Length: 404
Image (cartoon, rainbow, N blue to C red; front, side):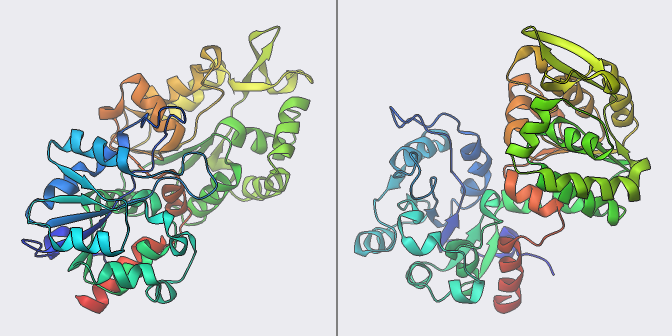
């Protein structure tokens, strides 16, 4: 099955509900949006709808969080970046929202209030249950078509994400289309050899990705770095020191050690682990081979000696899929591994980055344009790479079946 795209829709003069993911870091004191990357990623889709009445559905954070707030600042930010007026209304589907939508003219952009202010939007529901919610029934009655561009929320089975496509003709926006097409290419038709580089602290996600791509023969090599590497080193019987072992236990990942052990026994020749690490000792960076890791010093980065072998694997790859840093990159002394691996990966013919912290480092290094694709959705990207069908994508596929 395939999802509908904007080219399948006749949107001229129509009212379009556009679901985006503008969820951004916010300064709690001033309410200022600190990073507009997600806004910039959605601009092509908003511009592609300029002949329509564009009604934007978005969220910011979730109930109980400090940055759960209105979308007034988001409308102002979008207006500034778009160079066109964006009207904000502090209502989702009440009379004020309905009146505002019905009085719109083609070419106008209206942003409704944070959809998660409505309790139903915070529920996890099947598409068939979601289409019966009040929020979906009311919103669908206000427009002609639905466009989902919120890849960052594609792994959530929430009403505006999976319910609206069950009620109206729907399509993916340009960002959603690009994300799905590029990530799908990793599994079919990516230039070989394909190397996955899995790091950071989300060990369970990385182990699930490794298992999926090794079992399906998608990956020729899996390089583990960061805390993920520590878990694989433990699985291989190495002592990584008390602080690093305690961190794995504290993050509740001791169970992942057994899974890593099973992967090593089945695919050991395809899994690349560092043979040297950098620890913090006497306040500085000191490097040790695996058999000499001090018992009381935390592992903070891959060792520079191990980088040569890792970079050689990357340089010989046709495709690199990278998710998560190699160490505590926030500390300059331990950013070496992350920076070197990113620089080498940026030169590979087809390079995909799984968003999150890694994307932020790439932006800081000025390497954004060197990568083929940097995902806007960390959680959604990882779920896609584990082989799961994203709820938003499945809903768009079903919508195409229902409405054509």
